Each structure stands twice: as structure tokens, then as C-alpha cells.
Length: 305
Image (cartoon, rainbow, N blue to C red):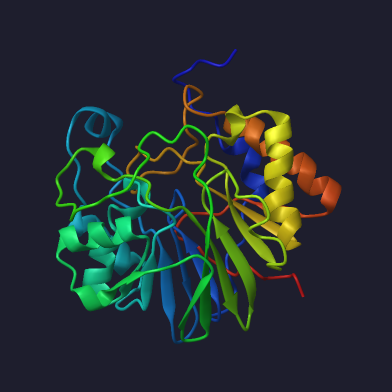
């Protein structure tokens, strides 16, 4: 029996954990939810960078703001002094709350939708550092080529709409509205990967966008029907021809980043079912599934040839 407030254990899935990187070349650091730091010897780019992770009561009943100290501690732990770009998959607080702080502290550009730009303005970022991207636009930073493809938020979007004025925290979590959702294709001489943070799709948007690896968001996927999951797999993984899937946006986003990650409670999602459904399709297509280990450097392309 599944108790609604219980959290599934990660123990049955430890054998799928991504091994640490053994080199100092291209590395990825997973920070929980859909936050991923990608860097090579010369350049570093960050997806979302959500580390404040306010508690459920505060999100539900209070006002939230980025925690500058937590971002600073995360930078220190990662050995980050500068970033070239911080980009947001969409503008909900669990993606965009801390992004302006990372951009301010590292001198990075903040990339995303007009809503993300308004969040940056509310933080006081200078206009030249705010880059509003358009569908299929490609931006280059060092050897990284970032292609932003408009996508769709996962089912049950709690805060739809756009942020139409500078968002000055503290504010209610609902102020961080979706804006535009993106699937981001990251090209690099080392390989190609896709950061697909929300468990939904815009039909055909990834057709012809070949990739070696997909970072696949599975938040609320455990509550969807099998036909929905079939089409999600087809539209994202099969469409790109990826040989490895790295699962993300499965962890309890209300739990502090200093504590071990755990899946969301059954009342909000069903991580074991989502994992089983993805694994069955992956095994049929000979695609490797891995579970990223927070903070640990990993080579997304290791062993793919």
C-alpha cells in the first residue's frame, strides 16, 4: 500500500547511478530538480541553478526569495568563480528563482523567455546581461552551442501565464509564472545532449535534432497514462536517437539541498512507476538509463564511443 505522504526509497535504483567522471574534460554536475552545470576547460553554462528550495509550507502559504548564501556555498562547492551563461527551461520558481543570483555573482548572461528577463530585471541585473531567446535560436559560448526550442510544460501547470513586469522578491511562488518552456539542445565537440526538463512535448519539435544523451524530466510522469508515456518517449528520446537517458526533475524540490535527495511523495508523483515505464522502453530500444548523483562530476558521453 502506498501512503500518500511517504517518499519512495532510492535504494532499489542505486545500481543505475551515474559513475563519477575520471577525467577533467567535459563534465556535468546535477544539482537536483533540472539544474545542471555543464563545463569544459574554458567555458561553463548552467541550466536553472535552483538551490534555495524553500519548504512546502513557505511555497504554499508564504513568500519566497532566493538565498544568496546558498548560491554562494553552491558555487564554492562546485569550484565555480565565473559562468558564461545561465539559462532557464521556463520561469517557475523551481527553475528561475536563483538564476539571477548566479548571473550576478558570476557575470553570466541570463538567457530565457521574456518572463525570465523580467525576473532578472526584478533582481536588478543590467539590461545587457539579459538575453531573450526566440524559437530555434542558437547562441554560442566557447565550444557550447545552445539551441532553444519552444516546448510545453508538463501536465498540471500550477502557475501558467507570463511575468509581465519586473518580479521583485520576496513574492508568492505563483508570481513565477511559466512563460515559455524550452527544450535546449547543447552542441559541443565532445557530443550533443538535450536538456528536456518538463515531461511533455510539442509534436515534432525534436525531429532531426540528433543527440547522444537526453536529460529527461520525469516530474509527474508517474501519474500519466502509458499511452502518454509512449508518446513522450517517442517525441523526445526516439526522435533524437539518444543512446543514454539521464533522469532529472524527480526529486523532492521542497527538501533542502544540503540533505540527500529523495523522490517526491506519492501524493504528488509516483517515481517507481515512472522509472519502470521509462526503463521498459529503454530496454526495448537498447538505451541506457542512469540516475545522476548530485554534485558529483560526470561525463555524460562516457562509453558512448
